[in-house]
Image 1: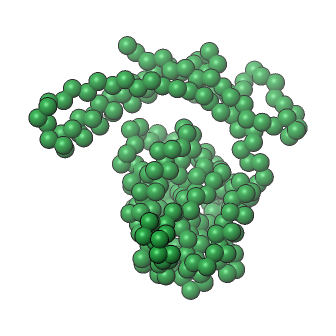
Image 2: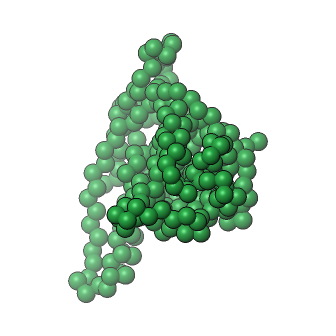
Length: 258
């Protein structure tokens, strides 16, 4: 049984608009949230053109010319701007029928390159429950046919698995939002004569110690400590009907050891 992606309805129009532009292909990222059984895509972001391409209005005509480094750099920048709970779920490519045959191979390569780049910068280790499937969305610019597949990024030999791509209106309208701010004040002693590679290594070690401190912290949600399997709204009356649907915010405080 493949994964199911529930997609914000507006993304369909966004991808459709991209497919009408007179370019051989367009690439981009899928942003959303994972859960054990299904994933939610709330934003699609096209890969911005490089400065020289913007100035000269040049569009590469072959998939072999895809700039893998530029796309992974874009993914890293987007990932750093995302709030907690959202991540880069996958990559999409919109291509002409002539290029469609090679699109899936290009997508597979990009999926693993993007994930490798993002994992390299992570301070937290993935949990056993963390979903490792990432979406590869292929769209034909002529027929508008949509094909969604997934790859297990923890397995370099992973083959494509079919996945469902379903549009849904007001997908995130009734999501819960946790509001939390953490002050970062880390002291990392360094020798004045340390070479650059030691500076980077020691800084990363200091950040790793800080992230471990956060993992071992106690979290208060609206002033209460909740078990891992407890619903955030437990004990509260649920609103009936969609007319009252709106994002609800909960305050989170982080108690760390001194």
